[in-house]
Image 1 (cartoon, one colour):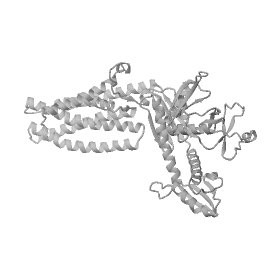
Image 2 (image 1 turned 180 degrees about the vertical axis):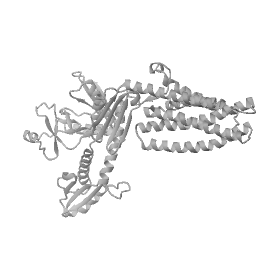
Image 3 (image 1 turned 135 degrees about the vertical axis):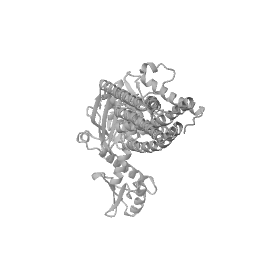
Image 4 (image 1 turned 90 degrees about the vertical axis):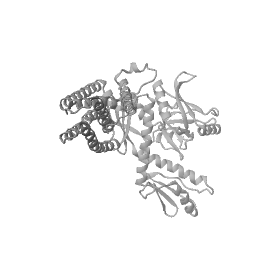
Length: 532
């Protein structure tokens, strides 16, 4: 236990020195470290310490159900026409939250069912499928979404929405945002350092569902006024309609969608120098766009964003380059936000802000000062207690505590961690638990001396026997921290991160590091007695 070869001593000092050095940049202003050749790792401050914006977003789950219903309608229509022989069906109804259609030839009912079955799938381990297929009156099919299928669709949509929100916020250049799901239909967004949440709300409020559809020129003014679209078309809002009517009829079939974009950038129009958004399609999208514009030259098509028509220009000539421009009443900021939204992908579900708050930097600075004061008082009291109670061994324990403080900060910097107010609480708690290890060791050494053991035997047995208890106690401690990290979110997770790091570093410094110091002293001084 007390055998420390030179390579091990050098290794321990190098590890501790490197971790302590990693903590130093976090104490320096960013303007200082920005001038360094290599950008050093720093501890990021959470929303409660740095100030910033907090948003709670809630998803419109009914929108997921309706989108899924519409997608299934298009899939059924395509599948019945695509395969040979074609199956003639009537209009597909989506009333009542389910699909229903009639097969015109009763002899093809079984064939239609065989084509529908692959469109459904099992839902996890529930034993249910995502759609129920029923035949009514011999030739009418009714497809009803199951509750398990709806739940799965909402869960998938929320997972995708969380990633889209993350990509959009990352495009803003903010550092270490916290984006986590809360419950089945909510997302918590915390962006440290962002004092004006309006731009963030505007960006996250865009679904960015981009579609290109042909304009239905057969719709009459009476149909637009009554919002009764011809079969196969739909009425959408068009605030900038040059005809004066803020509505327009477009075909339901999507020519091309935002899923086929590879890039979107804000630029200025060469004609009037107004802000616009230039979009680039992928290979499939470019070919499809070229084919559609070739086949429909002279006809108008609508550029639709979030179910609202931005513009409806005429196709004057085929567009073959795989690029297009979206123009409208944009400012530079709004065009840039739209480009970010399109680059990051569309939200699979509409999100609305149900709660928001802003933490000012002054409050964050006050929290930091209070946390530093609490940490300093805790360290000072612990150092005084250990020094008075255990003498030389207290000095070793105090050195371990001070180094442990810097090591924790160094590890947080290394993993680019975020320190929050609960994290500071975990930090202070770790200081106390680190001293617990040395108390156990020192008391065990004292007991062995009372039993008449020599100094070396007492120290060796003290570390050996106490270490077993220390590791077992910290293992249960770590299990609690892991549970909080896995199941918790936000402040709870921040507390757990600092706690887990502190458990690992405190065991290393309190057991291994102090044992190395004591072993070195025993070899040099060869004391006959110890005052502990």
